[in-house]
Amino acid sequence: MTEAVSITRARLILGDLARRVATTREPIVLTDHGRAIATIMPMPPGCADDPGGRPEEAAGTGPAG
Image (cartoon, rainbow, N blue to C red; front, side, top):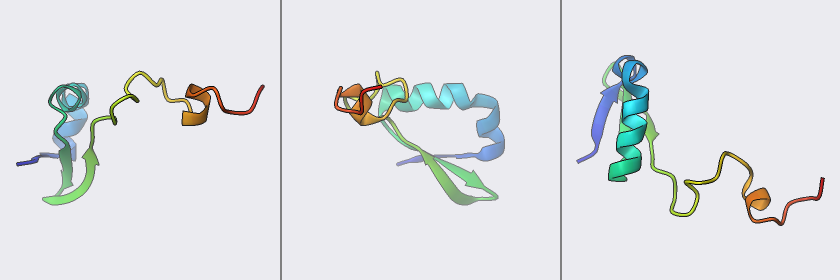
């Protein structure tokens, strides 16, 4: 079962939530007044080392610059 965490609580423990998702590979749903509003998802396999660049840059196929 997917865990749900209120956004108020998530503000306090965001680092812990992110590490838990990365370790367990299980998403965590963020809620606002009991209503699901967002999901923290693990990175797809092979993307975890990407520092945030665009996929074409990581693959070396992006525009030269």
